[in-house]
Length: 232
Image (tube, rainbow, N blue to C red; front, side, top):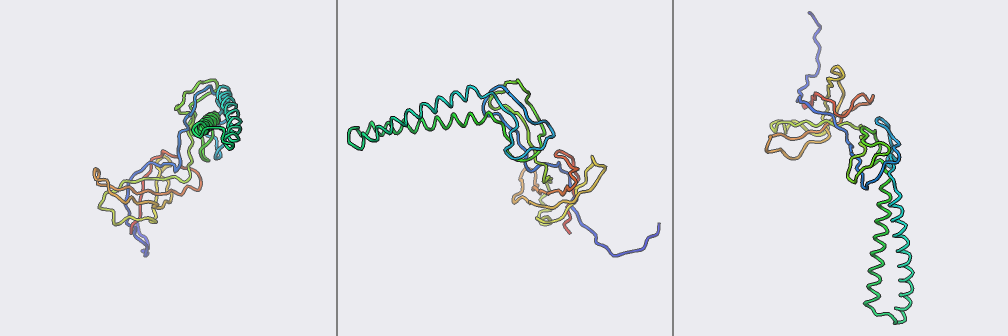
């Protein structure tokens, strides 16, 4: 085979492998227990930040919040009357201070009841895609149970663990390429965004993180990638 010679750049690259990861990825955990009344999303749905995803039965917590509100209102009225008597010198200082402490305690109990009631509305912690759904209508979940998983796939990251001998060659801003076997070896551009400031003594490696440019939305978290970082 005969070709015409031409002057071009030769690239020195460090090659490695990585798994694509989402920048934001979180399990949504039930903070209170209860029966699932409705599930408003399905796997694959795009959601906005703070969007309502599901509802739990809130009847008991609503009654507890109402009880705490009524108890607090009575304590506030009693305290207001005691203030007038205290100003006239008709109430002992110790008794008055104890009443103020009780009022603060009831206020905290009321706020806690309202907070528990708000946890029956399951909301998205950030904008992204529902990647897993572990609940169904009628199911009773316990506090601490995983309900849904939300992932924001933009931007995707790839972390490579590089031998310490390459530390002087790699730095933030260097361009790189990511090859995905699942997409027939298609290449995607990437950029080094983080070089770890320490070396792991156990493995003699340091972590290099790349941000992958996926304008077409073809990549998925969890994909296996072959990485090439251009250092010269």
